[in-house]
Amino acid sequence: DTEVTQTPKHLVMGMTNKKSLKCEQHMGHRAMYWYKQKAKKPPELMFVYSYEKLSINESVPSRFSPECPNSSLLNLHLHALQPEDSALYLCASSQELAQTYEQYFGPGTRLTVT
Amino acid sequence: AQKVTQAQTEISVVEKEDVTLDCVYETRDTTYYLFWYKQPPSGELVFLIRRNSFDEQNEISGRYSWNFQKSTSSFNFTITASQVVDSAVYFCALRVDNYGQNFVFGPGTRLSVLP
Image (cartoon, rainbow over all chains, first blue to last red; front, side, top):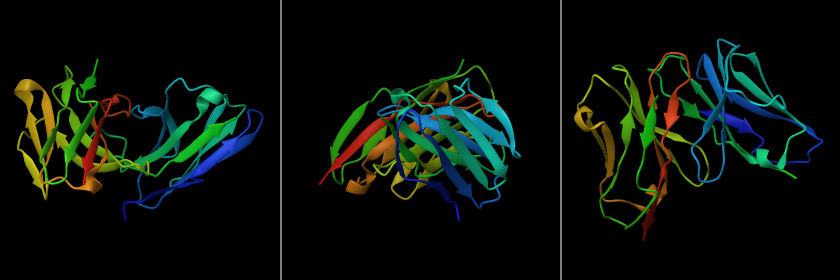
């Protein structure tokens, strides 16, 4: 089973709201990722967790706050977002963080900030 | 620095035609991995293939084939007898280190297969 699930599929939020995106995998993978993808662009890496510890933060604004409660779950907490944060947010996982392993992606959450 | 170029922004073909998607990469590392992903309109990136820098063998999987040539730093992807379901954006990607950074995506090629 090479499935990564994400909820919700769509999210509309105001600039003063607080919301969370959720990601789950049951493949026993120890590395999990958040990407942001704008229309007609490739995904951009935001955060990487390895063994439930934040390994990489690609200089993402603090209004995005990741959390890894356990090895299967990854959350992205959103607060005081801007309209330019509207995008497709993709979660991915890989067996380990090493370069040899491919990443498996979820279907994404399409976020609109009004 | 690492870079992936996919010169073809958009390609349109008629069903059953063969189509090749180009990917050219740049890196000074001798150990690296190349990937192809498919992103259909639904949004999910689907893993297609991984190739390491020491394995230049071409790969065939059904209607898909990949041609890796280190001499030209290219990793091209061919779909034989294309189908409408092949319509998607295809990303070539490069990864060079063990720490998660430098998973570099190309800009993508949008393939439209017309019936």
